[in-house]
Amino acid sequence: MSEFSPDHDGISVRRLVREFRSRTGPPSTAVDDLSFDVRPGELVTLLGHNGAGKTTTARVLVTLLEPTSGSAWVAGADVRTRAREVRRRCGFSFGGDTGLYPRLSAEENLRFFATLHRLGGAAMRRRCATLLDQVGLADRAGDRVESLSHGLRQRLHIARSLLHDPPVLVLDEPSSGIDPVAARDIRAMLRSLAADGRAVLLTTHDLVEAEQLSHRVLVLRKGRLVAEATPSRLRQLAANSLGTRIEVEFDARVEAEILRDCPGLKVHEPIGSGWSILVSDGAPATSWLLTTFGSSIVHLNVSPPSLEDAYVELVGSV
Ligand SMILES: Nc1ncnc2c1ncn2[C@@H]1O[C@H](COP(=O)(O)OP(=O)(O)OP(=O)(O)O)[C@@H](O)[C@H]1O
Image (cartoon, rainbow, N blue to C red; front, side, top):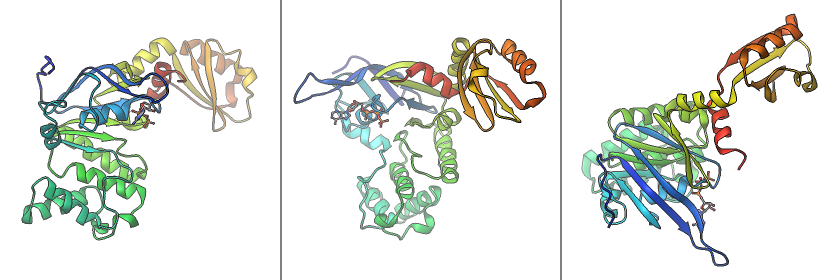
């Protein structure tokens, strides 16, 4: 049994390692010495490239995988020794095609899983109806899951994760495949779930989502934590090392070669009728652009680096 005991009932991970055995070679390490906390009322996002270890971390937290070493506590219970309590107090969604019965309707699915959480009677029916409404599925409640699109199934997964009103939520890419309007509703719902005092951990590839939702982001690279900060702090760190982003559009085509003379130029990429460039210092670069292109500039915007810039800087091209 681990000696660590957290001081809150959210998520606490300490020195977590998860390896996968290989038939041919040495074991591979999917999660490597990972430590972090998600306190009640906090919404934290795990970011990282494909294969960075996000889903493996989430699966350990919800007791679908055992840790190789280290410890993880969810809602006051150790995932290793009190798995049943963890499942009772934690809602999770991994999306995809498993976890729902395709021949049953959306509502029948929810009612079935509600009975597993020992809900019943009118209260259970009300709970299912409320959740179907919250995730925007009320008008498809009677449709078989096999007839629902990927995005609609994804919403049903989220509703399923909330059936027992858990104090901790672990959601793997909750808005993947969901259209922008519905994704906005789901984000609003996640925000309010955290505001109500739940500890919410998300994985996502969507940096806009991470920026809009998270109190903190954790950036994983090859299973290791390479950064943990608020989105604005990460952008600030990137600004210190990366400089300034300038978006400039022209009334005529400007070739990339000309931009090479821009002082402090680091990166340039085409946008619309111009370029988005990253420079070490905004002032000389802006002055050079204005002097060189003058009235042929139709739009110029100078801003700190985006969360995407910070993320790319942190995880590189791995
Ligand atoms: N069941 C498994 N058996 C062997 N290796 C696995 C298994 N599950 C995951 N891995 C490996 O562990 C590493 C981390 O995978 P994981 O799915 O956690 O990454 P991820 O960050 O969630 O990626 P993605 O963004 O693509 O979902 C990868 O190298 C993956 O191949």
